Every structure is written in structure tokens, then in C-alpha cells.
Image 1 (cartoon, rainbow, N blue to C red):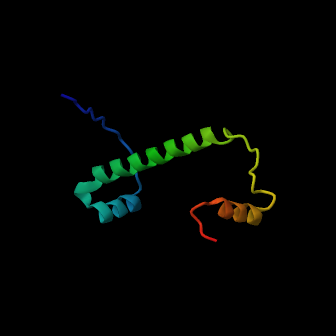
Image 2 (image 1 turned 45 degrees about the horizontal axis):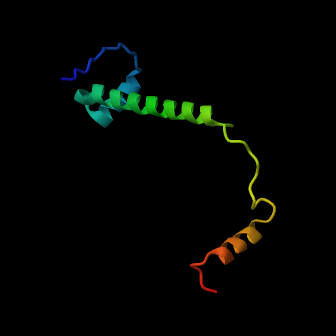
Image 3 (image 1 turned 30 degrees about the vertical axis):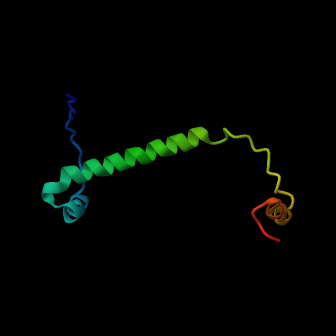
Length: 85
């Protein structure tokens, strides 16, 4: 059996923000709304951390199409055996 431990936090929010949360989630839905918002924010921060960690990890050697993209596309089309004409 797996137990999920919950920890309480005390956070302070302005009256206007709490009113907006209540409008969206209802006063009985505050905790679930705030929990979901924090989970989304954490996932987004982790994604950005991953992106920033990966930035520059692939060497920029250029591409074979950089000099003349139109010619490269034409050559790819001609080389495709499935293409007629």
C-alpha cells in the first residue's frame, strides 16, 4: 500500500487574488485550485530547466541546405523514388 503524505503550507495572498480564485474555483475549491496551479508552475519550471540545460549541447555545424535551400529541396524531391516525374 502506498501512502501519500500531505504537508500544509501557509501562504499569504491578496484579497483580490483570493476573490479571483473563489470566482474560478469556488471557496470550497481553493486548495485544489492552488495545488493544481503550483503543480503546473513546477512542471513548467522543470521543463525550462531541462531546456536551458540542453541549450548548446548540440554543436552548430550548419546544414547541407544552408547555402541554397531551394536546390536542396529540389534534389530531395528528385531522389524520392516514390515521386513520379
